[in-house]
Length: 161
Image (cartoon, rainbow, N blue to C red):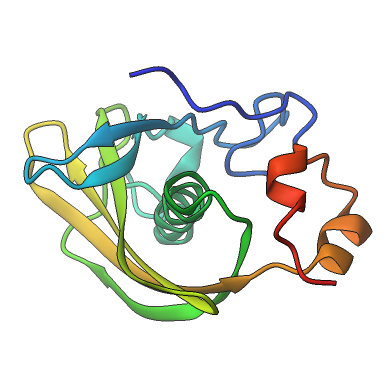
């Protein structure tokens, strides 16, 4: 599947392609084993991203889950959302530094004013690492304009003031 487009000028620590110290996560839309659309990111934690020796930092692990959740909300719904809060976050095992892992997210529930996304991380062999269920609410045009985020017209069209 083709990689999802992320402007090079994105300042995001998690997914900004040119962020000097960021994770630079990249995403693609895929189809889950059960046929449900998902967004996926493959990542390899670096040696300077540790909490405990050899283990990915807990906060950075949460960031990966949050990022793939956001990209699923945007890509799978076609609308811009802002985080309304995590519902649940769980860690089975932290990803290991230097080892490839996969983050995936899908929509669990969608309503006009609320979106619930489930994101998971796993080793490349499929062993679960963690999960996040997050609630999202529609972004407003004012928030997007204040942030000076360059969005395509089709995303701006549905934004409330």
